[in-house]
Image (cartoon, rainbow, N blue to C red):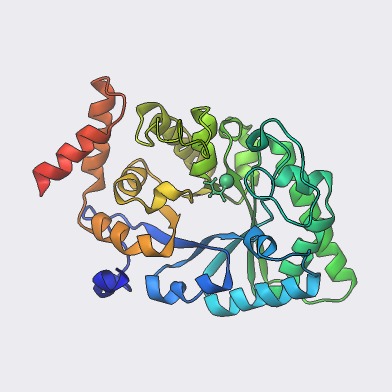
Length: 324
Ligand code: PEP
Ligand code: MG
């Protein structure tokens, strides 16, 4: 399928109305890395570090992690890689950690909550990332941040890890940027100060949508019930875009919807200019974006909302049909 889009692989993604959209890829395993070249991704917008932990039967050692992360950064050459710290719990259970009996794992002890309550693994991971990125740029984001304080606590762990490396006389990354995933509605309403302090935000649309609609992403009976192009959800996302603009915070979107061409087009239309997706989606998304006037798409979205539509999808499909 990637062959179909080979001719635009190295073409920057500029919409028909002249807006540049960055298309990045999601990754997590070494096997994903060759796709950086093959897909034409501008970088890795989400590196799910837990996948390396999930495929093992014991906790990896720090030195192993350093080697892994170095290989990732080497493969990316000078492209940006955003490492997300361990996101376990909920649907991702490590075989070598005591399983938690929780009534609602998706709402339970997961991701950064585990990282802050039991910081041993998070510390090891941050140290490994710092070592792997010595002399290079490092981007790290924390998953499932629901409130400002969790971000400041997680960032403090990074500060401590940096201080420790300095004490040990180890070379540090030339630049460290620290971001958060916006996956719970609460974070969209965090104080202005949070938006000013966080260096970048990435919307984890899979989780954000499940919490926004209170519809379990793992539950077949309800997970498709609410459309991503639902007016309420798009309006909510627009609010996040507005807050990020106000504070000058870089914003991206890295849930599965970023890789669906129609959804990606609407996300771009409401002002999300960086999308991270599975590598195979980059070609189709770029192809559609390059021939679309997203200002027109935005107008279609606004009209559908004003008309009282529940989802803007029918109006968008009609617009695309008429244009074809
Ligand atoms: C998300 O929630 O949208 C996301 C990108 O993270 P994950 O799918 O790994 O939970
Ligand atoms: Mg998530």
